[in-house]
Image (cartoon, protein in one colour):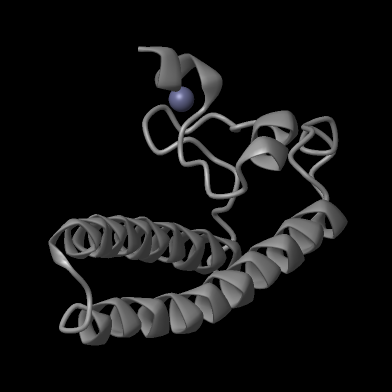
Length: 125
Ligand SMILES: [Zn+2]
């Protein structure tokens, strides 16, 4: 049985090397986020503990800072989930295709955001 279909050689889906490069970027992003997540949750704890010592105005500042920290943590968590999803698609050999139309997302767009799940056309809809 021949694996190489001559009609298939013309299609230009990303090379394995490129996908491997994206995989490395994603893994690096993930470890950065995980590190930030650890330091970030420490900062949130500190704000909570300090509230007892500070006056009314600065307590509001502290609460605002805590809310911001929580929002940042929440966004990080979402980003981590997107990264995990992208890594799973790489493992499953499905990386780089649009969720909606099934077309290729395109390398330029993946470079901008390696966790993209939609092509430019579907994003603009
Ligand atoms: Zn699409």
